[in-house]
Image 1 (cartoon, rainbow, N blue to C red):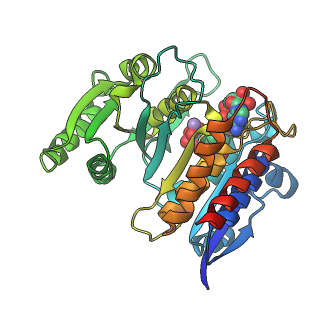
Image 2 (cartoon, protein in one colour; image 1 turned 45 degrees about the vertical axis):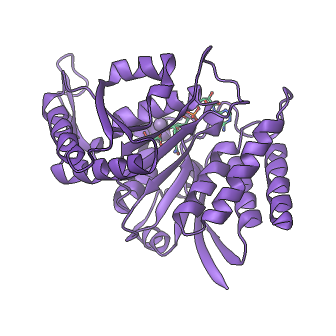
Length: 352
Ligand code: NAD
Ligand code: IPM
Ligand code: MN
């Protein structure tokens, strides 16, 4: 039987709670494919227990999987032992860099039955293509005269023509398959070097895609449109930091952060891609079984679609849609949402 070798990093906080439901959905949705799951105990809790964040041997093991499913990592923000984002940078970002996840794909689609905080949400269906391996995330900075009144703290945003071009090309190709509208979001009125490079590359690639309508927004204005008229967006292409910020906002307007899925893609397939909800470990609600697992479940659907199992991915999506359709006002426990979605996946498979 065909295998799908899956590495699971459940992580911290609500990570393990939502990942459990995502795994159940995958098992239910796959047909004629053996899901071989290997759990990796990584994250803040693991670090506090063992002193290990992500060693080279584990990284090498992770590499030999078809895909990675990640819950969320990051511990109690008040814990001084975790200061400086050592887990986020040493684990999550290290994986994104090591496995060259240069496309961070973050779709938003507001289901018609789902309440949006917007009074007039309109038709919300867009994808943010966030660059995943450059920008201010590279850790290229430093501080001088640290701790003095004369401290100078620098964070350098790295933007290479190579790195920008490959993610821009991906975004145009995606736009070709969608509504053929692409918006570059940057801050080129201030960040002139990086912004100039992004705009020039978008212009050059646009010439190869005459059927894609291209426009540009400064990131501050983009946040207005995401709230006022999100239907204006189809594909947004942007840098690592702007993409991080915009996609939490996108999650909120698209039905809630508990619905927002993402994929860290290595499109060449040289390394495994990694799928995770947009949200974090939510320490404020962890351990109470109230986290919405839908974002993790939809991330599993993305995983299946990008790992050669589109039918199984579709089954999960249809089940989530049906679940949202049937939602009343009552709040449900994490596993109740998972149960409802898994039941629907099973039924749809039996009826097929
Ligand atoms: P967060 O996304 O964890 O939480 C923000 C708010 O959204 C909280 O009120 C939380 O309760 C709510 N929320 C998040 N997911 C939810 C869900 N599935 N259902 C219902 N409500 C949900 O962001 P934060 O508080 O800024 O970060 C907490 C920790 O997670 C930090 O350590 C941060 O660095 C880390 N983090 C990790 C990832 C990741 O692993 N991919 C992503 C973002 C943040
Ligand atoms: C995300 C998170 C991460 C990011 C953090 C935890 C490093 O916010 O996946 O959106 O900034 O990319
Ligand atoms: Mn984020």
